[in-house]
Amino acid sequence: MSVDLPMPTNFAGTKGVPAAEGKQTAKEFSSDQEVRWCPGCGDYAVLKAVQSFLPDLGLRRENIVFVSGIGCSSRFPYYLDTYGMHSIHGRAPAIATGLATAREDLSVWVVTGDGDALSIGGNHLIHAMRRNINLKILLFNNRIYGLTKGQYSPTSEAGKITKSTPMGSVDHPFNPVSLALGAEASFVARTIDSDRKHLTSVLAAAAAHRGTALVEIYQNCPIFNDGAFESLKDSDTKADAIIPLQQGEKITFGVDGSKCVIHSKTGGVEVANTSAVSEDQIVVFDAHNPDPTLAFAVSRLTDAGVLHQSPIGIFRDVPRPTYDDQARAQVADAAKDLGDPATKLAALVTGADTWTIV
Image (tube, rainbow, N blue to C red; front, side):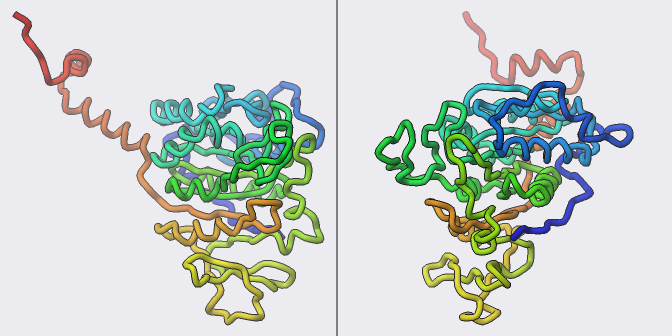
């Protein structure tokens, strides 16, 4: 089961970024570099979706920047004919923060993985979301360290046997969506590499959002963690495994809507058989609710072990002032108050406090 999302036509998230002249094509956003991922890697599908989606933004290629960290997904900037930076482990959000704050004329994207973003880069990620900087963060989650050959990652399930955990991991995994909602990110979504239509629609919604947009992408690693999301992709199981989130609609799933989500007695939500509850008990989902409580509760339905069920779609999409817009406004106000342009630099350097040494 998939989710059909409306395709935004007004990309408010890119206001201030110069528009392109004429219609662009996916080929124009594809570089001449050989794409080098393992055969069957989910990154290929995400790359094609991004290359085909970018022309819809209507922006000049020189005003789009992709910043990556370290990992298989971090090769992304090489394969796009835009500006880009292959930065250092976990620090892509920090570098992108500087770009987005200093250059309003740029559409800034971060490409990262579950190891890069949630381990060494964890603090950079949560503070970018907390500040609500105008970034679009694509978090590729294959639940393993792929580039370094198969160690367990912060999203690997407990008991995962890998080269670094031969007796099984004793770590409890992160739920990236729950983490983002806890950091009060203003846009949070989850999609799947193999669902091109849904992936593209989520990217469009993220681009239309002014502020930090985090999109978790379930992405298969055929070499070191093949089949991690098989229950969400197999035609025999995905109807019961995917919980589609559609704005303003009741949360039902399963064959012929046989299952639904209801409020639990503990204050969260739980799955029930639709035939066993009344219509008014079924949760109506609202991603635009300023209170993230319901979105967080729904995010907890994700199975932390072998994924038997997982909500897919946009969890949160709310307006909130962005850090970079406010920082630029403060700079503009300060410059205005300084008066004569010839004295601005000196005034900024010396400040208001001076001392006389005798």
